[in-house]
Length: 562
Image (cartoon, rainbow, N blue to C red):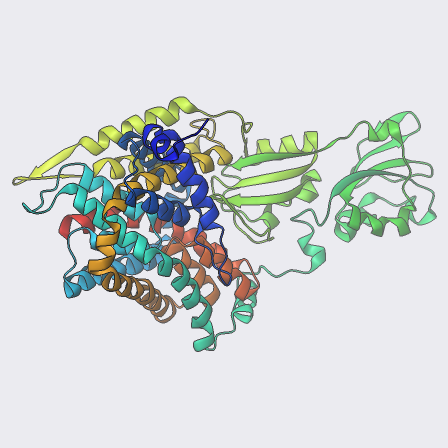
């Protein structure tokens, strides 16, 4: 039996869609001197290639992808977006605004200079800043039917212009930004590792290993039992032994004959007592000198079980406090083994302040971890539980909001479907940070929805734009590429100058904020590596949510005026 692949791809759009996505992933994983396009870029280029040969998928698939992507962006940014304004938000907001504003102005200026047609400015801006939300928002405005074009220009042509502009500038937007981020500190002779260490000291983030172990596991926590036979350990109150301060280990319970005792600072150990101690295996090595080699006491060990539970920080008792202030180990014998903020894993530090919506993994005895969660927040619901009802109604609300327009003269003004979905996602995400039992969508589910959504969307726009790709390259390819270079490089330089000269920001933190303002996660990894620290991630997290919202709004704005 022979299969006509050409006919199959025309007749079965599902096969075409996932073939484009699969090939796009392969293209995105190709390494060229340390660079790769990534899944989004790979899928876009695969779609453009198939589109050039006349293949296409139903528009509804593209719409579904767009809806999932934009709503998920808002949902994820919601908890952090509001809190960003309450502390360092003004600084990050202005930095993101400067970069987005500079990029927008330059995209318009370059299109005017080269005489590029309608839609190219939005595509160039989105590609140069590697901002897919900008592309999505611009496409949505064109497809909404609220714009009028000249007699010789159709919405399909403008959409194609946007996609071609994005595709041509995307590669340099990705690679060029990484090059600038790598070269800028060298040109300005900035020692990023030294600057990161300097900021750690200013923020009191650098501690001795002994102190730091009070805030993270310092290794794998475990419960061990010891028999008290050493004369140095008996007839002395636990307060005098001060085991917690010396080893960061905690005595959980004492078995004396047939009795089980709860330890207190006044408790005095006796010969042949059996004690249960929780702490990292590394730290428990220090107990050997005092107690001797641990033994296995099954009766006492069976009373304890080490578990790890995830919690969402919501309590006023925890928000704004540092891990040092909370003293989780000293109070509960538990450890913070993982710290997540807005989908990013942050380095555990004694003086990092907790935000509402932060996710902590608490490791320790089961009852103790539950006590920590009750004190500081609420447990994260199981990963398989997803509040699809709220998710669905949130999308309905966003689409309805996008249809609302207000007439200014004869011109209808509205936020469009992209704006409505973004606002709705922000609202639901923000509410969830205050009421964690509401609207739960696990991180893994959010990732799938967002990733699959953007890939469906890029596959659709790429297939449609592929028809005019060659003509676009022939008529304006070099001009678009040059425009993209300018829009990628200049905003970085302007943002760096503003951050250093006006905001007086630490270079390591500033470069992280710039990568966040340009929504470039690959560039963040470059800054982290160059600074030999995760300090830049703090700047990235602060600016990313704000920049995502701004660049989505800019995507609607720029296509309206060009």
